[in-house]
Length: 462
Image: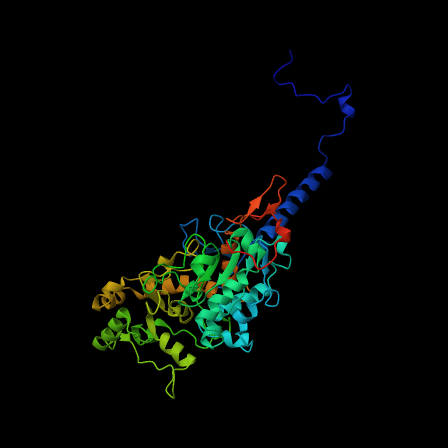
């Protein structure tokens, strides 16, 4: 038996001629390999981050693992729990010439409505999202490899411009859907529709019959005040931001710049029409009682005294808090506009739904107050909030307001980035509907056992 102090000998009888197990060259090579691995790992990690922000580096919600936050490297990071490490998505965008009727939904029955005229106002998002997807690196021109299908339509704008009436819109949508084999294959589950106004999907009167399984992009989460049922389903649809004036959302080209808190004249403001809505009427009466605290000017949106966009934003920036009561529907564009004049939005709409809730904690950047308690109590509460708390909310809002801007895909952060992440969470590997069947060899057939590749329009809709 050898001593415990004996060192292990290398195999072979003449160990004094054995080469060392690890030469200096090997050591240097190993160090270089470790350094290269670290470098490329960091490079790939940064390349898969979906958004970056050029704003503050303070965490939005430092204690939450599920929230979007800004890193020390000035990157807007998406949580793995919310979205994942990178996008892997293929979206097919229908062309208006391939489906009979689609052109009418985009340009009216006579084809005379130009898409540029539909870019303004609350319905502008239906055009912006379409244009961004046409240029997206996630767009595919092959239906067979698509994860999702986008159906472009500017129906709200076309209706407002007199291009189609409600009955024509309904009939045209049904006609369009009957010509889409992939829509029938999945029952519409992998098809995307945009309804950008307060009417939501109700603009298509038969939505509940034909697209109740489809993915609906809309800023409107509730219309039960006027309809028997809401068209928004929190498990399949996506709330999108309203269409804020481009001159306010583009970096370096803002129409109006925010004022320091010390220079703001009012505690709060409400800029909008009464429209006979209880909450808005209460605010107007409240402003008469406390004119030095709450501004509610009588706004005119037509005629010689019409309020211009610059005047509107100059009014909006002159208060610490921007009040956003319910109007014709639960959502209001004023909520999103508040972030760009840097006043804290106060939501006075109980049924409101907000975008990207799985990554944005709205308690950190806004206030929601019961609409049934609009009165002096509201102003007393807002007045009690120290300026340093207001500044903190504004700062955190500044970090994420890029998510309300419909910027190009080259932008480091935008509403489109967030929408794409939300869409990726809707992707299914398998597609089926009540009119879809499959056989032992994997072929998909219809009720008459006709293979999917041979389906021809018009087809019965699921």
